Image 1 (tube, rainbow, N blue to C red):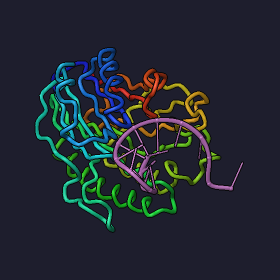
Image 2: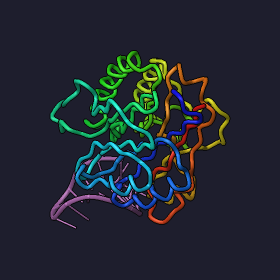
Image 3: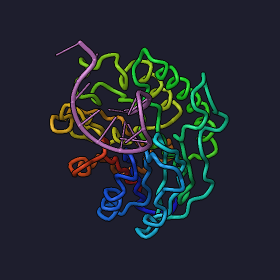
Image 4: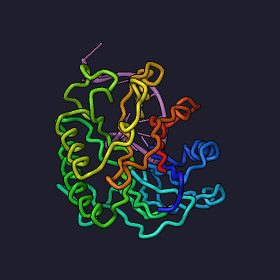
Length: 265
DNA sequence: ATGGTAGGGCACCTA
């Protein structure tokens, strides 16, 4: 831990192939230390390492074709890069290699980039997979926190932790992204000693990080706050601000998510 | 009434 301030952000780009220009423009406007990406949807061989390097960023990527894919971009050196949840391979016939987790140590901070399973619908097999995946994540995280007291866990959680994180809690009651079992899992993550940095600060009402492409969701602010930056106990008091930047969601051909950014002293 | 849009990749699947 040496840098002050240290800025990190998370952004589900929904295809880095399509969104690379937005990412490069955003980094020019926001020359932060670390940016975590989800849903790159490309194999490592197609990942734009050179363009990012030219923009001043090192990158590590765990990618696959069509689905998932996570990356960490950093201005600084990255060490101890780890892919996936150690020991978690496959469950009930689901694909062994869903690329959803990548971690690295940057300037003394353990950065864990996550793309949590969406789950589709509460009565689906994918929902049960989400629960098991989360249970494995929580097991793994408790060990990681002991190894790395300065830890930031950021990404697309596909969980809106509270009713105020949903544009219409009545309409969504019990549904995917807000269901009680998903929220219990989120609470188990925070019970490990991780804090939702967004809620450490006063925030505008109806702050969301994702809006469905359908039904003019963004224009009507029919959104959810499902992208989060959680910080360990040791980092909590050093947090200076956490904001959602809606600007990229207003561009032509946007991702359905927008960046969330944390500043640590 | 299960809509609607976007991305990948070329028939649907995922979100």
